[in-house]
Amino acid sequence: MVDIEQSSYPIYVAGSFKVTAAPLDIISSYTQQCVFKTFAASADDYETAATAACAVRQTMQDLPVYERFRILTEIAQGILANRGELAVIMAREAGKPLKTAHGEIERAAQTFLTAAEEAKRLPGEVLSIDWHRSGARKDAIVKYFPVGVVAAITPFNFPLNLVAHKIAPAIAAGCPIVVKPASKTPITEQRLDK
Image 1 (cartoon, rainbow, N blue to C red):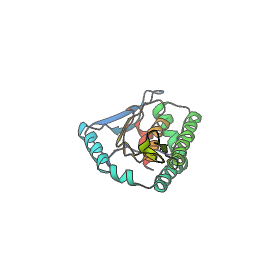
Image 2: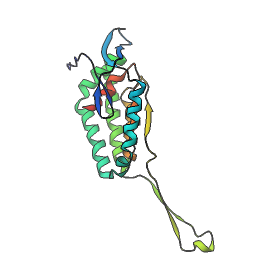
Image 3: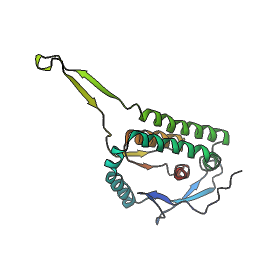
């Protein structure tokens, strides 16, 4: 079995790991025992995260598609490379059987790979506007742009795959994202830093 012993897991806020004044015990729904320790974010932490996300909005929007593709592909590869550790963490904090946890890990990696491919196909349209004499032989080009910062709150029941369903499309579209994982199962999401 994979060794995942760590005294506590700091939270990730605005690009760095942080220990807060609010410790949070993660209780296994299966054993009712504390299996991990982490920290709860404060209102100031959320404000810091949102401010940092807003500050990189233009950077994310300007990120070329090939870079978005590379980032998403590397995340998928990282998930698969760390599947053993992620499965044990998910089993311990969510009470999932290891087989089910491995299935969710495979799905999450596929979600990032799908988003990587879809980043190459972000839609655009060319519309004929010759519905009036002044528009004869003219076309309109419709181009889509990132909407801005994405705020995501994820549930406990699929702690990796539902996080992936928020993060991957945001990166593919060029949007910064702030994720608030479920307080019952935050460690799986926190391990995406690997």
